[in-house]
Length: 304
Image (cartoon, rainbow, N blue to C red; front, side, top):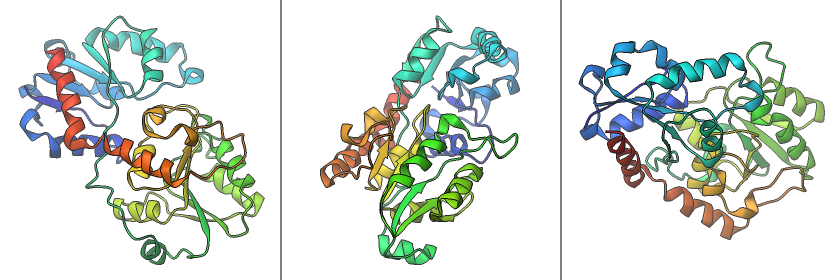
């Protein structure tokens, strides 16, 4: 069996997942689509870049990461239904996405969560990371490393990512030395809110992996405020690096975080206990790519 993985080449998370797949599963992979038994549409929105003849003559698995109901208009539904004729199986990372996709297709659906690559996210020294990033050792640092503003005007909040909830939450943290560490891109909405609230922050736009690791390790708390997610990857990354993390109930979060770490964020501020941090770490470790990749291989073999 040989799998060809379709990546979007957008220098974003799907490209990293594709790279890790090829690095960790060379025995069942090919970079020549003509040699493939299975075409994995990891970036399913790129399906129309593949010849229809190839899609008809190969087994095709499409990953649906998450769907925002408010944005799933008639045009997107029509596109989904047209593409459905080429799909043999849908892969989703969580139960919530599965329930939505069930309404759209009669094709089989496999729930297989994202993996965690411990080699990519080693735990580093907090003081050294703060020193390297120019951050204070005394500050209580809260992190958020995802885009939060719509690309059309760079002003409107991307509500599925919950930037409004994030800002509401950090504004309730009653600590004088509070500092917010931002990563990713399109952070205009959160930056404007932080400035308005006079909360100090540092922003590293599109940091490379080495700096992103340091950013995680520099944190006292990571906050996931999304309303819809596939993972998010940050839940695995933060938990796997023993960073205290709290989150809304989205995506894979119930499979990773301790129940005490999952709430609406409208409640009072909460700091995870040591036991919760340990639980989160152990759960993230259960998705380690070296073992979890077998669940993907099993899915690909099933479709054959």
